Length: 470
Image (cartoon, rainbow, N blue to C red; front, top):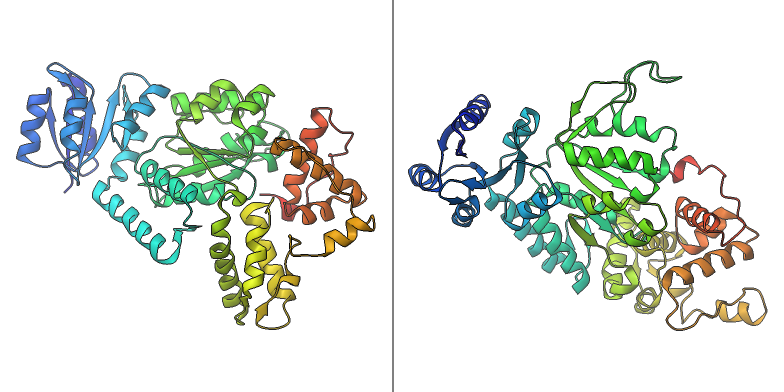
């Protein structure tokens, strides 16, 4: 049987916690001081330690340093109040999780169900790093560049904990893949991973979808509905494009993060949640706060552990590796192997990739289809320095050219290119999105942002096709 140690100087609290843990199939010992705890650890190495930081003969942090030497012992900090500082402290001290007094039975059971030796998690991370050196990928993330290696180190570190993660990066960089990798390396891996795009849900339905609703709570609510927090119980909830969530709903999300409780729409019953939160945005977080798209207090609560994904143009050395991976995928699926010519691979590396990895994947798939033999040549690929077509078109007036000053912010360049492409293609949004190498949903989001800021007179109310949602 797994063994637990409860370190708490309040005898009643320690005894109650011990009884709850024993009911989950653990043997349990208790200690009321650092001295007693060290003696109990010497008698039997615990699988999990519930450690109160305030003890009569010192701080629990002193014991935490000792426990770091035990690779098979998981540590959960016990605190009197939940706060952003508590989350950060738990992470820095190497704790896997933390509980708030009085303990929630739901959260305690969740933690006990996920007890896993830290050495096991570290061994899995080491295996992924070995795979990176050999094959060029860390789980489902591809690339050996320095920026990506930094991302892998961050994923490895935060996966061992339960703290909230905030992922930033341009559209198409792989934010959902990072979130799933964090989940797959965590103690929650055997529970659901639920990815939700906040920009793809109607503002009128998003509260019901996230928190659920009771039967009869509004017109059309003909049955009780479980929201994302309930459906992801014990696992990970990934909220993509968090800045598209209405501000009044952001207040309720903040309350869930702080209290671990929520209510379904139309209910007065408070429900507990045991979910690891990961959020993401393709905007600059501080600019989103300044423009009123993201509450500042929610940003600070989400931004416990930030991970920034580099754009593909910032790690162009990874392009050949990623392109070859996508080509291998489609070749295996279609049963006909093809390869890139050396010139084609050079052209891929020199392209700017405004749509990032998503655009690269689409280009590789299109090139595979267009190639007439087993070798893909550069005419199958997007225009780059070696492609003469843009020069001819510009010279004949077929395609307008845009001039920008050195130092122009990338967001402004994106705006100019997006609007110019839209005008050139007769305001045909599907063709514009395809030409820019972005999803139709991303194009609508950009146009909506430009319209709201008064930069352009645009019609952005058209519905996004079903195959562009999610």
